[in-house]
Image 1 (cartoon, rainbow, N blue to C red):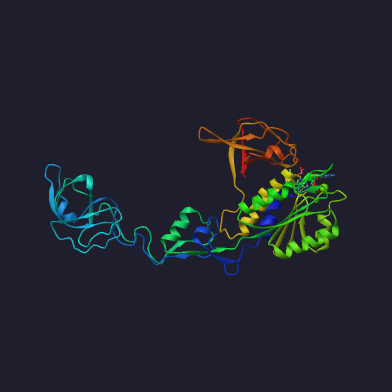
Image 2 (image 1 turned 120 degrees about the horizontal axis):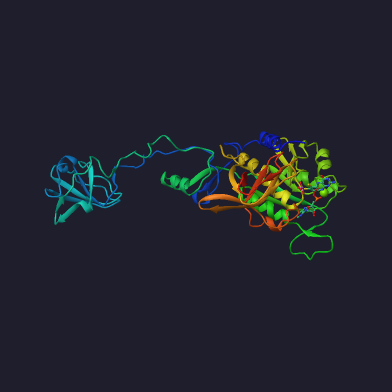
Amino acid sequence: MLSVRDAEATILNAVKPLDNQLDVEFVDLLMANNRILATPVISSLDFPHWDNSAMDGYAVRYADVQQARADKPIVLQVVEEIPAGYEPQVTIKPGQAARIFTGAMMPAGADTVVMQEKTHRQENRVFVFIAPQPQEFVRRKGDFYQAGNEILPAGIPLTASEIAVLAAAGREQVSVFRRPRVAILSVGDELVMPEQLLKPGQIVDSNQYALATLMRELGAEVLLLGIIQDEPTTLQEIIDYAIANADIVISTGGVSVGDYDYIYKTLASLAAKIHFRSVQMRPGKPLTFATFGNKLYFGLPGNPVSALVTCWRFVKPAIKKMSGLAKGWESKFIKVRSQSELQSNGKMETYIWGKLNLVNGVYQFQKAEGNDSSGNLINLAQTNALAVLPVGKTFVYPGEEVLVLQI
Ligand SMILES: Nc1nc2c(c(=O)[nH]1)N[C@H]1C(S)=C(S)[C@@H](COP(=O)(O)OP(=O)(O)OC[C@H]3O[C@@H](n4cnc5c(N)ncnc54)[C@H](O)[C@@H]3O)O[C@H]1N2
Ligand code: MOO
Ligand SMILES: [Mg+2]
């Protein structure tokens, strides 16, 4: 059976990232949160834009005050007051100073700022009680960034700090990759919508909600195709439509070996390239992966936990890679101690859902309480991590280290 590692490699190899020319759109800065920057940004401004003061105090000539002492202050004449946002009009000459405030432009002639607390003001004179360092408390033009260089590279996610940089560089809009389009369908005669009264044998299609939520979290545009009956002709039509209208199609259900599991046959009849239909993992063994050219098809197992685990493990990095992220799209595992005893049959790579708890500043894994059937979505709620037991590992003792995937 195909290992998880090989399945992941097959999937990630099949992902074609969005094109940085064709798959780009402009969005307002305040709508750009979590979008991926499509074009490198170069500013025509230096940062700081001009020499300015880092303190409220006095702009002075260093040469004037280098001998200042508490018991022998230097007295300077204050010739101008410079608040932030004001362009200084006066050149500071020997024996002179300007009153200045944080962020205000340095006046010509001055090279150093003495903070207010080290001075005493008497009318238009200021007493300086301490010798500053040369150029102290001056933020020099271009110290943070020089115009013409790359200020932000393409392929990064935009969060508060990057959006602040874009705003400071005078951008109102930014070019980002369009959202990957993901079609979601739920396959099963037993499935109904949440508002429906359940007849015997029916259950609510919770997978549609789980996957739509996860896909939106990942920045995808979701095309919800609803519940599809276990019927080959309808399935064929809907998958054909989904492939034509999305970059990625995700179905749940119908991938096992039952008489009503039609996904494999349907994909074959649509001439999909079927890369695999089972993976050496639990839950999630019957995961099916196919491609139609550059379009990806994930046939996730119907069990609610299996659907989410395979989505976290395989679909999530695929979406991230497709979305234009230059790096950091692979699944990230961290090594932590397990607080719980964990078990596997040793034959499958086993994913155990639970919580990462912060104990004295160190994360520890705690297995979810309750039934760990892949059909039990109830105890999956309020979990945030999957512990991974590799093939061959049958037992993790409390206190032993384990690899954990944050979800
Ligand atoms: N003879 C075998 N039977 C099964 C095997 C096997 O190897 N041999 N594998 C089992 C495993 S493991 C899984 S996982 C499931 C996968 O089943 P399918 O993908 O074919 O899904 P269904 O049969 O349609 O449904 C399975 C289960 O999940 C519930 N379900 C389905 N869709 C939804 C939905 N949208 N929302 C909520 N719950 C859903 C469905 O009612 C079933 O209970 O196959 C095993 N069988
Ligand atoms: O692999 Mo299935 O996903 O355990 O129920
Ligand atoms: Mg089935």
